Amino acid sequence: MSLDVSPALLEQAERGEVDEADFVDCVRTSLPYAWEMISSLVAQLKVDGGEFADNQTPPPNEQARGQLLRALASDAIRGALQRHFGVRLAFQNCHRVAVFPLDASVDDRLAKFTSVRGQLLNQSPELRDC
Image (cartoon, rainbow, N blue to C red):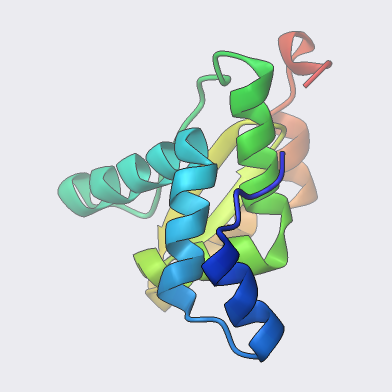
């Protein structure tokens, strides 16, 4: 899934620096499932507090799964989303998105989530094809 880049945003890129707010808006409109997932997790983290908020429900279809993969596999998109929302994003399998606050007090929990052990413990036969 590619981003739906407007001619104006493409022109910005061709001229040099791109306004990050314009880029984030492009991501929001191009990847609505991923945007909603991340923004809802950020809201959950703010309301509930705690070390992190995560989603453990697989996407409803391949298009939604592709949006999550696109958003979290691209360094530029992922970085822009982290800066926009003021969080650190983590990702396991093809759907388990987690948001962590920037606070260093959760560094150990983030390290556990993103560890090889954490990845292995998050496996299940239902997710083999994702």
